[in-house]
Length: 217
Image (cartoon, rainbow, N blue to C red; front, side, top):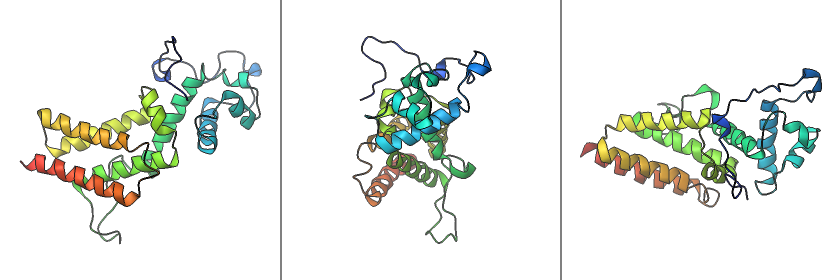
């Protein structure tokens, strides 16, 4: 199992270290057709296919048709690459350019009553996050192992902040409500494939109802 750092190792998040996406060495020495974006996309596919426990730089390189050492032109460590893959998966939270937290249902869509305001936005965000966890089981353990501060992770955090602002809650109540939402979302990671979506949505409705009570108190 991958951990944030090996025993005795101190590492800095890939998002906190400036590293050119193109190797600084002579272009003629660089592996043909390889770049960080392609490597990250291949990492996501390999993790989806074989899981986190079987992931290795050698397996990744074999799938790309290059040597394992070629990958280190673009990333310093396997941990850096896993951080990049984690944030790429979180990019799926905003499909088709739709703003994070924007209610997906609208009146007359045939999907029932329109879900509006912050409750609708929170449901949209939570369901999208659940889909990412279901599609990529490795996202939950990596989110716990790494700082998770890439651009898509920050966009998720900002969307959640906007939704909590919209509740009108302040002070300790606001803090508690946001903590409850975060624990709910992250807590469903390990059980997402075992929990029917209907049960997840019911639990989410109960959570939102509790926040609405606090917001109107």
